Image (cartoon, rainbow, N blue to C red):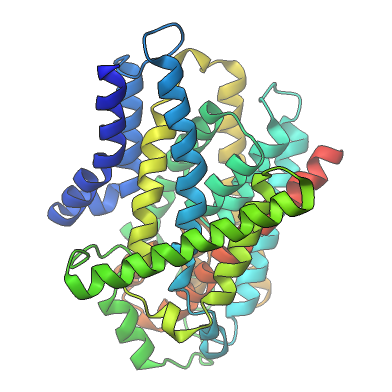
Length: 393
């Protein structure tokens, strides 16, 4: 029982350690908080520290893990959406809408094509795993976890899919930042004369990083964060109540869709949107979830079909980039706008400022942010919709 208590404390305290390291070391910003959370959880699993099977306290440990996972993501979703200013859409660049739509279409085509190519490779629960990939490649980690949980995907598959996605995507981001953007500037129009920059918006997003954990415990900020947390819990209660009313039981699909919709609506209120550090507080719960789910990693599950999953993820990433590039070429989208658009969809808004900084082109900052925010909003719906389609085939 002692092990259960210790592991439970690690689950809760690990995000504090991760955030401290993230604030102190530059290399942590490049690796990312989610990756570190996964490393901690997988280490716990590989060293056999988490009670499983017939071990003492295994049943209690499993119950605690289930409770944490069932609560962490639904609470995080509204918190991470509250600060999203979807009204930026009206102030974005002329071709932003096309880049967003072309990127989403490219991801959907790549996933569906990959589904038919790899459907006989033995990947467990493949239709739902493919749907999760749509979620992460149009909205990010939050959508990925929400879809996986709601569709009942095995936790081990969630961990492995997320790990493979990181392995495949990270080199692409490094390539873009390390100078690859120069290639796309040559292949696509280097300048877009239609770009009009709102300097105030640019300065706002330059000075307010998405994962800026400084000052969260200050009295004025902390109290407002707790108000946001209370609103988020209230939305979770509404989602649960609606599920019980409609089905007589708790259905995660209904709960997740309800809280996502309510959070998007709430973000249009300036009072809620301006509550400080809600994105960071949401990330705190995502980090807890990441440590918990990765601590259930089973190394013995790595087999031929799992390696097919890696090839599937690689296929989706490559095909989606190529299709998005072709569409951008046809419609004369600038190279920098293409890059921030695709990065926003693959990795979500927090990755946009570093990419823009590397390219030295502030003009495309707001477009990247807008695409990422809309991706947050639609990623979950797209994933669920594709799940219905693929499971019916």
